[in-house]
Amino acid sequence: MNTLTVHLAEKSYPIFLGPVAESGPSLDRFCAGRNVLFAADSNTRAWQRPVLDLIEKSAMHLECFTFPAGEASKTIDTVLRMIEQASRANFGRDALFIAFGGGVCGDMTGFAAAIYMRGIPFIQIPTSLLAMVDSSIGGKTAVDTVFGKNLIGAFHQPLAVYIDTDFLKTLPERQFRNGMAEIIKAGVLGAPELYRMLKQTSMEKLRADRTLLETAVFQACDLKRRIVEQDECETHSSIRVRLNYGHTFGHAVELLSGFSLNHGESVAIGMDMAAQYAFEEGLCSREFLLSQRGLLQRYGFDLNAGNGLSPEEILRAMFHDKKNRHGKIRVILPESVGTVLVQEIPDPKKLEMFLRKYLAEVRS
Ligand code: GLY
Image (cartoon, rainbow, N blue to C red):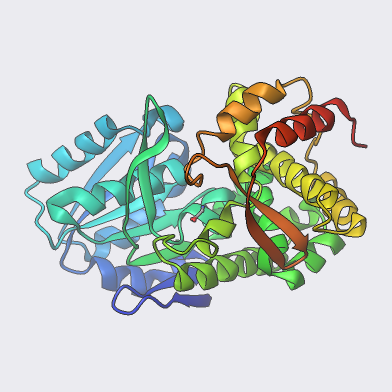
């Protein structure tokens, strides 16, 4: 079992990477003598029993809260139902919430834990690749509103994160690829060794080789750990915000595709757009642009999937991004593998022209 520690003074916590059943002693220790609410989405039923057995061994009392899998569940109503169940069972501030599922489950359970009795501890046990390498680490918790994703939320760090790549055995290929976009992003952002490894392997090999997959997940988590340690609450103008590489373009593409493109598929297009824009601005080399494009395509991302979307509407959606300041769009642009910078776009017309050209070209 590999362990990383996110160093945040009194809020520091471990990330355990390995079979969750083998981490029994530490999960026991966190649950011992506590009331535990286990929140899980309906997709995870097949994996729940061994984890529940571990919790039941030491918890004082266990409540299970299950909700339908999918973004539609990520609402304040689901959080209220979770909290009401804890209240009915008379859970106090010493209770523990455990999130068992993908990003929706982790974000929502973390938010419930952040506000229940003004904040109680919670543990993340992510079951999707996307949640393992991104959302389970760093304490961003939230629910959606009709106005957009993650608009109600809080920073609330977990007590521990358990990453067991065995849960990915039944993850459909498209969902696996969804998480791969964040691993590739981590490589570009600040893990050149990971980037090189991804260049040499493939999604098929990663899916088939537990050690290889754990190495990639470990390096992506380690990059996120380093960034979160420097800028926990994204207050610095250019540290944690870098984790949004590919996301400003990507979120707009995801939204305008009517969510027919998932997060990873959209972020992959967003990274390619950011690199093409950076190249045209003289920030990165053609070699980097083509290297990243080749890597994204190697992992099966269709970089033409956004073609046909309206450049005007993409630009409009980018104006709603949470990273924008003083009404100006801010994007994360690459310089080379391991170096990205945050840049304000002074001229939206130029960006629109760029989008028009990008969306008309076919990349093969
Ligand atoms: N997923 C971006 C962040 O955690 O900051």
